[in-house]
Length: 344
Figure (cartoon, rainbow, N blue to C red):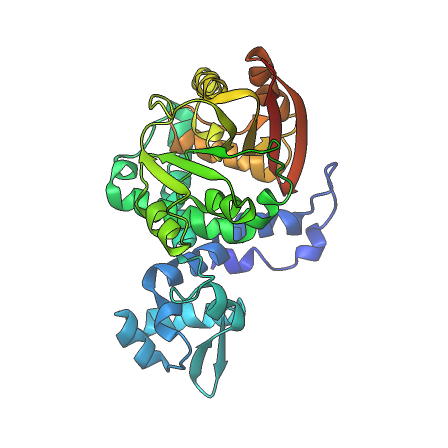
């Protein structure tokens, strides 16, 4: 009742403040969780996969999803309003975007990525307590084999869009043959680079490599891309690499651990080798881009010491380690690549 009333007569309160946000914008921001959660709950119930390419009435959908007819009916109607389902003559179908991205059988499915976003709801729900009392660190579930498997699949699904954008501007050193993917997860970027550079061999080092191993075999690259289970802060990956990729890893750690991590990168690289740091980079003011600022808050709740960092912070760590020739490339939103060369 209160939620519906809050949307009434917004024009009367649409005067602009100094930052150009209106009352209408504010209420839309406050209510934004509802649309997100409707999508994530439907994914959790397997609704889009159950529908697939067929059409079902509410009773059939409730039976297949093992829900009440009333509950699934209200959810399905909301999903129609969000253009995720269509409704005609009492039959519900997946919309084109749902068939492409939300059916687990689709090659472009992001169902595991949505699973991860749904998992993060627990972090946001407990955010006020964490801000009052401090970080709680990694949740016990994140150490389980199943969580790590699903997390790797989520990161692979994220790479469907990001991999081409990230790989395109990467220029490896001339005659590069040895590549290290530190914390490489599903190995998506190593696979993409190996497909681009025919003589490149890669090592994917991460705490969970089962998904990477499967994807590498599927890509028929097992002779050039290998995996190793290990901790990025302690496991020795070897030396004399031509290039190292540190993708979506820096935000997991605090400053001292990141300096330690990048020190290990320097040790692994040959002189003249390059490091590519892919991250949610903040501007110097640490307030923009806003998605990086919000992600930093999530890392406060999700990790023992992680957050988003500025370009200058990461460059500063690398400079003290003997890196130079920095190049910044923005990829998408706040996601960017910081390239640096080991000078000595």
